[in-house]
Image (cartoon, rainbow, N blue to C red; front, side, top):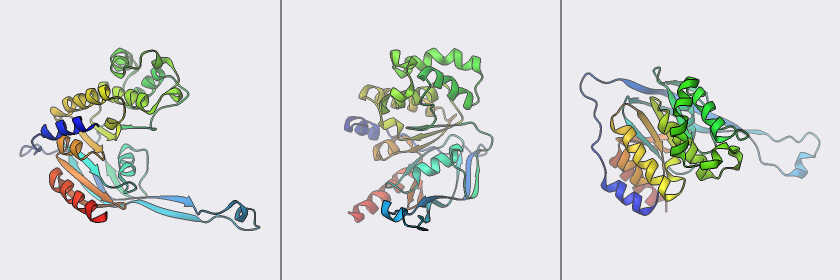
Length: 267
């Protein structure tokens, strides 16, 4: 988001959400979740052609022992420097990545993920991807067709809605992704930096829409963002990840203040 939006967002900070006594209902529960990748050890082309010289596998632990529970209606941010495991954790909650260890329980809630580069078939048109995305989210075909005009109008893609998604810029991709989730609402919404992509007008529109969507507390939201102002404005709780480990989780202001102090010490 631009500086003007971030300043406004900070000024609009809302009251932190505390479930009323007796109304607590878990939406997301993680217990000792670990996620690792296998990668090939770097080697030169010359070494590859040497007899019997094969690159060795290396294992990278992206998420290490993550445990937390998010109640229904909570708005949770995830912060941390690049490579800390934020997006990997979000994709695991979305069901895109499987945990090597531990469990992820969504308690029967439907979930959607907004992230650049995830979820669309590049050879299909925007219109076709709306249908495909809706079906994958569990919506009936007739419901998707009924909402199709609203999604297309919100996306502001015009004639590009019938062009292959591979021709889209990152901003156009973001517009389509956000528009689908903004209209076809799920119980749990996972947002990975999508609010910061797109033209200035669409950023403002999507931010206002997100504020309205979470205001009634019928959705549980997790937001990965590097925007301190966005997280302070929207989130009740923030998770700070560092090198795959949850370093701190709690009140948004307290966690973000601690993270800022940590990053200043790193400089």
